[in-house]
Length: 309
Image (tube, rainbow, N blue to C red; front, side, top):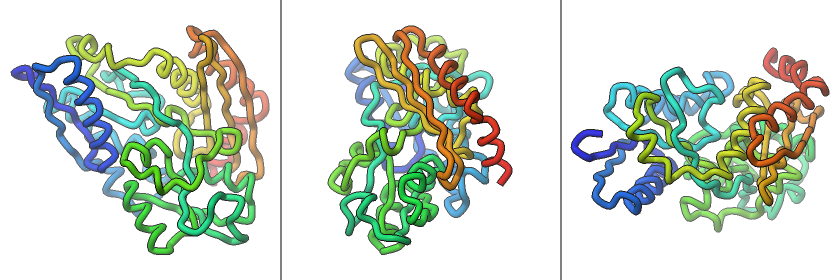
């Protein structure tokens, strides 16, 4: 951190910059004399918009350039949507803080329909997520899923241009950008379970930066961290990535965690579900337990089938 100036590496999308700005403001409230600058970057994931993430390397493509800046020390910290962070970080990096989670649910967005159930046979639903697609098809096999990439505004523009009857987006992203008026309805986790880590922000640093670990400690939200640890532990065990339809969502109530998870076939014809409870301080163990439940139901075989297609 040169001359008392902290540099935040961020993707250049409006949502990513909002997220980095929110971290900046939080840090300034704690350290008003600290100079903080945001360095916007275009990642490979941002450039390859015409290909499926599942086919070009997954969501890790959104953070590699930011990690390179951390290694080169042209930036001190990187701010990510936690759901975009691979389950295993490259050697030499750590997540120094997980911020308090915003709403983790998905949102149904449409200009002509009030909910998924009102969509007619053959209606097109836009999503880039195999997780969302599988769960929607499990409930509404008469719908057509159509791939959708790009930042939030690009996706909304495609809907407005008539390319889709409806699209599914993370509710947190829409709310953070002041676009909650575009949401017709929030998708309940009972219907569409979120992605591991959805709604939370992660702050990544080089492992050797002890000075930053201490600086960022006040931004770390213990309850959120416990919930996403359970989710990400499960996903890590099952090889979770955007290449398979896997969902995990954990909530904390009265120092007790409840984790629900599922693995599905790409067409939603097969959906395996599992859940369990554990004390707040046993988040990682909870992820292991629920992963084992899914494995006993045949999750690994189902995942292998999905990956072989």
